[in-house]
Image 1 (cartoon, rainbow, N blue to C red):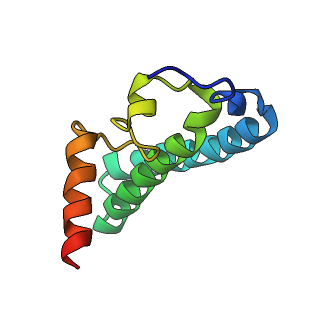
Image 2 (cartoon, rainbow, N blue to C red):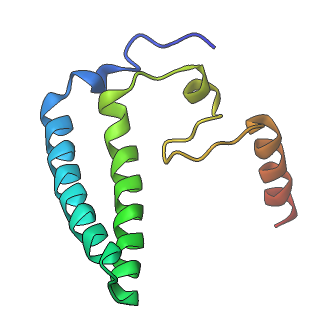
Image 3 (cartoon, rainbow, N blue to C red):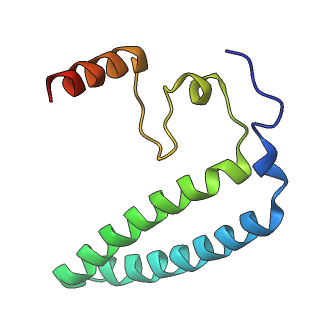
Length: 104
C-alpha cells in the first residue's frame, strides 16, 4: 500500500507534540518518584499507583505517536493500530467482524 500525500502532516504540529511531551514528562517524574517509594518497601497502594502510571505512560506514548513517528506500511494496512495494538491478520479480523455483524 502506497503512502498518501499528507499522511504524516501531524509531524509538523510542534505545539501539540510539545504539549503531549510536557504531559509525558510529568508522568515520568511521578513514575520515578513512585518507583523510589516502591523499591524502599512501599505499601500495596504504591504498587497499584505504579501500575496506573505505567498504563498512563503507555497511553501517552500512543497519543504522542502521530507527532513523532511517520506512518509505515504496518499502519496503512491495519497491522499496527492507533492505540499500539497489533492485528497480525487484519483481513481475517475484518471478515470475522462482518460475519458477527451479519449474525446480529
